[in-house]
Image: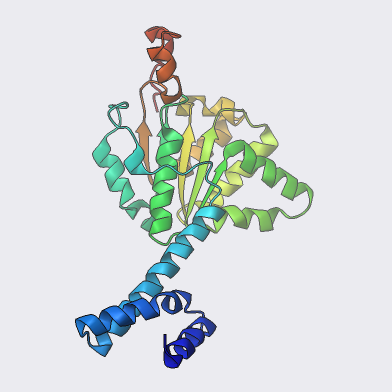
Amino acid sequence: MNIEHEILTENLAKLDLSEMAEVFASLAEDAAARESSYTEFLSTLVDHELGARRERSIAMRTRLSGFPYLKTIEDFDFSFQPSIDKKRIKELSGLRFIASGENVVLLGPPGVGKTHLAVGLGLKAIAAGERVYFTTATGMVSSLIRAFQENKFEHRLKNYTAPSLLIIDEVGYLPLDRAGANLFFQLISKRYEKGSIILTSNKSFTEWGEVFSDTVLASAILDRLLHHASTINIKGESYRLKEKKKAGFFSREVMTPGPLDP
């Protein structure tokens, strides 16, 4: 590398154009060999820089999302859950529901892929430049209760209202007391028609009165949550238990839960 290349590489690094600095020499040689124009060479350099920045941004937002694991929509085994309309999931993957401030509710017994679908849609949103945050219902409510006790409730609430997409997992796995249910309602109200929610639950809507310890409050939550929402009811077997079923540990009657009726 000649002195001019060295100086240019150093200056690119100083300008925080790290990817350009990394690939400049090899791209310059390639451009010379192909007799590319200056514009073509510069465009290629800029494309590399923008691509690298996009990948870094996606990686950072993925780390901050709170996902319990990373599984894509493409990884989902639709053949194992034939009750799910693959075309509907593909339509949701287009993310128009986020642009419209709409919600997605995934209902079904444990192990049928609700969280996988939620994470997969969340990863699609991150790739599209959206900010996403994943939390469990009990974890979120516990966090809001602590913040309320420490007079930091409004600040903590912003953590859950700021992202373009909030994913609330496992609603109904543990019942909430009245205080927790009220804080959950405040969150839903804050995001109503302003930001999208993906929510998963193992309870049918008729059971939400028990989940939130108050049928009136549960109705108010559902009213806001479902006003602009797609509900997907998954009727099938558990992924986590299918291998045990093959090994003969469970009978089909035990393995096949009944559907959840909205």
